[in-house]
Image 1 (cartoon, rainbow, N blue to C red):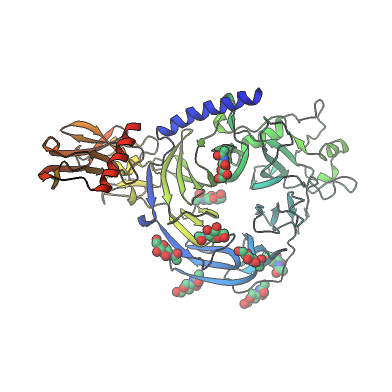
Image 2 (image 1 turned 45 degrees about the vertical axis):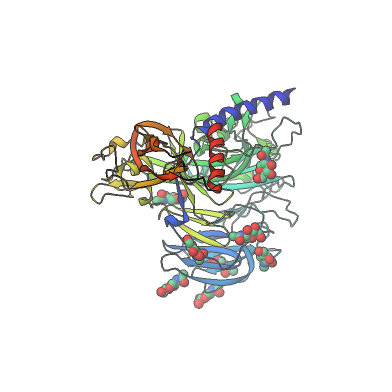
Amino acid sequence: MEIKKKTCFVLFYMCCFLACVAKGLDKPRITLNAEDNIFRNYSLGGNHSRVELLQGPSDTTLYVGGDGKLFLIDFQKRNHSEIPLTYNVTLMHRYPNTQYLYVCGTHGEPVCCNVSMKLTNSSEPLPAQGIAPFGVDEQAPSLFIEDELYTTASYEKSGSKIGIRRWSDGSMGSIWSNQENTQDLRYVALAWSGPKENKLQDKVYAFMWEKNPDPSREAELWVPLVTQICKVDRGGPKSCLQKSWTSHLRARLSCGIPDRKLYFSKLVDVTILYAERWNEGRAYALFSNGWNMSAVCIYTLGDIDRVFTTSSFREHPGQVPQPRPGMCVSDSTKLPRDVLKMMMGPLEMQEWVKPVGDRPLIISRHQYTRIEVDSVMAVDGTQYSVLFLSLEDGRIHKVLEVMGQFFIIAELNVFQRKTVIQNMLLQNSTKKLYVSNGVEVLEVDLHACKKYGTQCVDCVQARDPYCGWDAISQTCTAASSGTIQDVQHGDFRRCEDLPVSSALHSLPFVTEVPLQAAHFLNCPMRSGHAEYNWYYNDDSQGCVSTDKGCLLLIETMGPDHDGKYECKASEGGYERTVALAQLQTAGRAAGLPPPLAGAVCLLSCFTFFL
Ligand SMILES: *[C@@H]1O[C@H](CO)[C@@H](O)[C@H](O)[C@H]1NC(C)=O
Ligand SMILES: *[C@@H]1O[C@H](CO)[C@@H](O)[C@H](O)[C@H]1NC(C)=O
Ligand SMILES: *[C@@H]1O[C@H](CO)[C@@H](O)[C@H](O)[C@H]1NC(C)=O
Ligand SMILES: *[C@@H]1O[C@H](CO)[C@@H](O)[C@H](O)[C@H]1NC(C)=O
Ligand SMILES: *[C@@H]1O[C@H](CO)[C@@H](O)[C@H](O)[C@H]1NC(C)=O
Ligand SMILES: *[C@@H]1O[C@H](CO)[C@@H](O)[C@H](O)[C@H]1NC(C)=O
Ligand SMILES: *[C@@H]1O[C@H](CO)[C@@H](O)[C@H](O)[C@H]1NC(C)=O
Ligand SMILES: *[C@@H]1O[C@H](CO)[C@@H](O)[C@H](O)[C@H]1NC(C)=O
């Protein structure tokens, strides 16, 4: 009964949702293809099962770790260095202030090495078990901060004993999780809360999911969680939790619309946008659900911290010992017994961490696979977030977050064929996005603004915070002070010299169409958010959207079809002519050639359904 009701709710919501989709809110405004030259590509000379990406020593360079190879690619000079490795790369970090990289991989067993930044030499193997995965398929995020390495790889080949560990030569020592788990769970991302004003309270957060222990049918399959540990944690005393975390807490993440019984529980990917004030830092979390829908929920580090520092503890009603479990203390080996005892089990908060605005930023029918986020300063000084979401077939959506809503600025269709995006890296200082499918690596220029069009309106309606209209050069270009932009509303009235409503003045060539022949008029559709319409003698004729454009079909040509046709696009209150045609009936009747007859039938049926 319950299940039926739930399914019903979900179906009802899906219908409403699909109605929105039909209205185009879920559609990219512009599609950019490989021919638009917004990227530079580099071939890896093979098909790598996994690629790891790391910013190189200079702005246009990138380290790429693959199967048995490590590359340093210079996209500007279009050359590269490479060294052969005896393993397939699974993890790369840079040691701060040294000339070395920390590179790990697997050859059946995990292995780590120091590799010089210029790829001239590589050290003897370093310890790797529990740091790097056994297999290239295992995703195990790691974090390298302040000379400490936090890792989440499985400790055994079977993929079991997954937990968060710290590796440190310093006074804090290495720490292992006492809650290492053999059940189905995966770490998705690690984040640092700091640096906080009070360094003692610096924490590391881990985003993860695990199989829901609740076996009932109406329960969600997965449970998304965030956990915390204190950076100053040095484990318990000899008798209890020695060299194990004494500050490990967990809290559930909520993402969905409870009123509609719509929940997203499979955490797919998380990326962190750090802020000047640590508590304003945001975790952008990508989820999916059993219906193959995607959602993005945003959690602030401040909200996460608040749940860990104020919520009551699940299954621990009553008195909470002092200091409060999970509080960071300068010497965790001196914690009282009752606190340590509580920290032995998985200790979960009663309260769930809620997303910003209490609901997802994005709910989409697209199956997104990865997320990257950039913070971009608009011309008016406002900071906007731009999300990059990869799809399962190799496309990428560039999405603006604005006033709690989202707007798909563009679809980047950069790979020429269907492919699986293996990794993405946003380089915020150079405004480049690196994407790889294992065969090639692309460097996508996020300032490629010219593609939006040749008029101010094209540039302003794009709502791309990276781009602005330069009135002097009359181009859509990288945003800078003085360029015209309206990220908030995309209002065309920001543009000064608006072209008179009909952009194309010259009379079109006359096209002669044989009497009784069928003829199509095509109107190019640049914007997925505009409405297109063909007019004949100022009467709207409508048109049928296809991949190629908006088509107007004249089934049988005759003198009453002679004359001027105009296709207008209307978007955000701005209307303009995008195509003109002039038809004239020619000579005598012509029979329909057979392929065209088929197309006419198909199109008629299609029009009928619309
Ligand atoms: C880069 O892309 C172009 C087309 O956009 C393609 O012709 C070329 O083969 C690619 N180069 C590499 C090295 O993959
Ligand atoms: C690379 O190899 C994988 C697995 O064998 C395959 O599915 C994929 O299509 C290959 N990629 C390309 C671009 O050829
Ligand atoms: C590319 O070539 C230049 C010389 O033209 C060289 O200095 C540089 O090291 C090369 N870059 C890489 C990544 O190999
Ligand atoms: C690396 O991965 C490839 C699959 O692409 C596999 O054939 C090869 O054996 C692996 N190499 C090592 C050293 O593990
Ligand atoms: C690896 O590099 C780090 C940082 O430079 C250094 O502390 C460590 O001793 C190196 N290990 C080896 C085996 O070279
Ligand atoms: C790498 O080579 C440099 C000189 O070429 C040498 O000084 C350094 O010790 C080497 N490092 C390792 C880890 O072998
Ligand atoms: C979701 O997608 C997967 C693979 O892409 C497919 O096998 C599965 O049937 C889909 N599920 C639903 C409910 O559409
Ligand atoms: C880029 O991101 C890093 C880490 O998130 C941050 O510390 C840095 O301030 C950012 N830089 C810019 C230019 O936004």
